[in-house]
Figure 1 (spheres, rainbow, N blue to C red):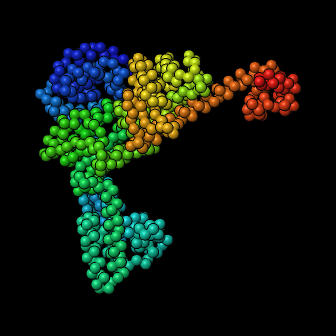
Figure 2: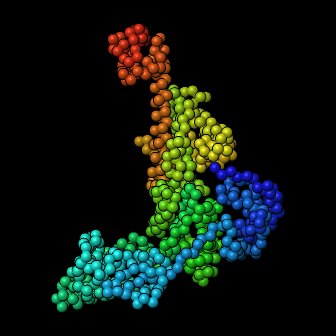
Figure 3: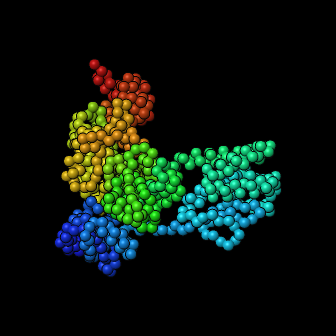
Length: 616
């Protein structure tokens, strides 16, 4: 656990911030060495800057670290908030402050290379050299080059192995690509050189002209070959035409009716934030980029705004930027993007249809990228991220606690607490509670006792940063609105920033929805979140009921067997182990009882006598 020591200058900084004007402008935070560590803009300087130096409870970890290092700040007043936005972008680019997000532009030019050798290859290249090869490009993104090279090699069945031709012709067996119909396999020594050269020429035409042009040219040549009765060649051209059409159909999966746009999605998780950008031109995905940022300051709408400012400082602006959620200051950002583009630029958040599906695909890719970087699965990362969005949380709930009450008609009241960290069970943090203050069937009262004890434990162990000393981002109660209403006053009175929701079951005891503030949040449209919540609900129920059965079993032994003279816990356990049930013990004969391990005839007669007296 990171411990934050209060900045000794916090009071002084707050007093200074309260004297700021309620005007738009830019604020600049400095550390003790006078180095600029953060730059931000504000609609009203006083309101924005003073928030940093008040209560630290609502701040993210990164904001708290930044505030801890602030020694003094300065500000610049502007006439409008838009001027403040433009100035902020300019100053961030100039000073590169530690706590602002800084995207690295590692994008260079890329080429498609047709090598200069007896059996040319189609490969990627990062620069054009004077080596006699043919270079197509330059392209601004490696994704487009890689995709085009891969498509050309598959459609025209060009070799991608490391063999050198003609040196390796006739040496060894052809590779798997030949067996599955993806390579002409000149290595066999049976492929005429003119057939290979023809494939290279057609691949070059395809890379220069695209799918439609290639299909038209190949169709024309196929018909000519058929007329000349060159049926083998016509069949070869027909197969290439079919391959091109098949590839074109696959491309439609990532095509859109919007001619030109960028699609941006964000995934947040433990210790990192990932952004995915899909770039479309002519309705087709032609490039993609991924960015991983260890820490970001603020909620998702703030993060998206920061990313858009930085990203389009180094990229061309499309007519439309489609994002996966709300963007802070979207109107100002639209104005900035429009000014840079020289034409109208829009920021949109689709809610349904084709665009929403593309955004969701982009978000899943962001989650997968984050998961790989952090050593988790993309599915779990996406589920935690989706749950946070669904519940309206400021960030994905990395640490979730869930509670369930279990009893038998009010007897043997117990509760179970399970913990999920980053979407996975953290069994070392599971806890059991025996209800002490509630008698009879009162699930609400029992849950109040459990949560009260949990909060008290946190106050006692908060400096340890683990177990009860770690604060959950989210508490999920196994129950509906009644449970949430019973517990919410306790959470609010504690002043701790814990999100609280209930898990609602249907008539078949399956997870159906989330209970929240007098309404229910449906889980049916959020498959990943639904699976995660169902898993949590099933696990907490299993854990609570297992503890209840164990407690109830001990209670039965204590009240029914250990009350008998000469029968202690050890003999009671052996009797139950042998006869399975209390009823079977009481119906057994003296001889049967005496034969049980640890028993003698005197103890057996005592059990039989007790059983006779209990029967009416």
